[in-house]
Image (cartoon, rainbow, N blue to C red; front, side, top):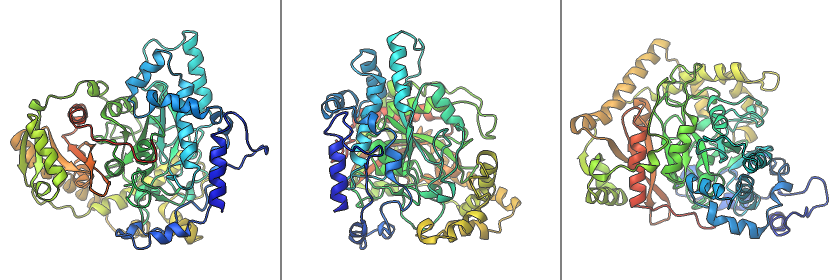
Length: 558
């Protein structure tokens, strides 16, 4: 009954234009519901980690998230929403900008359109993806000011393409005006200033729309727990199959939100597979950059050795634009690179000729995955030179210790520098473990085996440096044996299958939708290249995307 009532409220909101259908000053937009039936339905799921213990968050009240902008969103009528669809839905940034320049679309309308979709689907318990967990209360007003400046001719003459585009952020990225929780109840009061990449986005004119859910602590809390789960946001769900397909992790909310067209684009983060996996599972384009290309300052860490933010978008054109908007040298990040990287912004407009591509195809994947094999053969037919090879076996032991020791040092450093210790009571992993044990049913329903492993790891500083060097050599040997011999531009993989090798090698990787399995589950082709070849990867990805436009919108979110 509660579920039906909540659905009726949502329908009333979007059928009454600007009328506030609830007389109370604080309208009831959402009600928690009994998710036990859904949990029971997944009890026998073939993937053990999809046998959920809960769907909705036990601590997040969606009314608090969605009330502040309710009156603004309700000003958009269903007719206006439908009229704007052809101008916005599934369009790339250049197309949207053209509509704005031609006065067919305004910045405020663009923001309202995405908010309308978020309210429409996220407040309905039958369609919610548990993706958006915070909204920027100033975003409509900021967009309105851009429209006014455009009207009087005060907009900057030279504007980055990201200017005025609504962007969602993974909730481990520091953002002023919104809490940065990493999905943990321990950080629910973590009020911070903007991270370096958010400052860059704002300097280039992007509008921060809100924050999205993630696998708690970037999926470095519990072992074999569901991807996309956090105590703050609940269980993120995949729009291509809610409770049927995994969302991928840990940038689960970034992937699902882009797939559902909740924003122009989103920013995720990756340590090993956390952009590639959710991008692949949600049929969007995701780029894990070379370590050092983008700043990590102001991002809740796992590993200062391997962490990086990256763009997640509906197409390769937007991916290059968003990546470009975050570039910049950061003196506070020891890995940050002070160099220019030409061609990233324009990569989507300059697709690589297939005849110029030399690509490595992994023999075992050619034998075991028909979608991959057919795609590789299609690329060969278009003129790409394909070299099939078997990567060497390399030593990857110590990977977990690298993450353990890095996090044991890097998390306290983040908390000391950014968090307000009067509001955030933890200063270490040990504190977080103790905090979680105080209310384990709510804070750690799937346990915290990985956090406990961080405390138990006895690797020395000398041992850590040896592990880092050995793993980097191993990762590079895995790809370089073929790349150097055959002068390859990239190695072709699937989803995040070889993300660990790319992570320790510090190599960039681009996932582009490759199709759908017979079940309807998305699958991606992943281009892995040498350091700082992002522009070339994007050009190749754009050529592939244009020739084989396989991405489809998830049914029910059209």
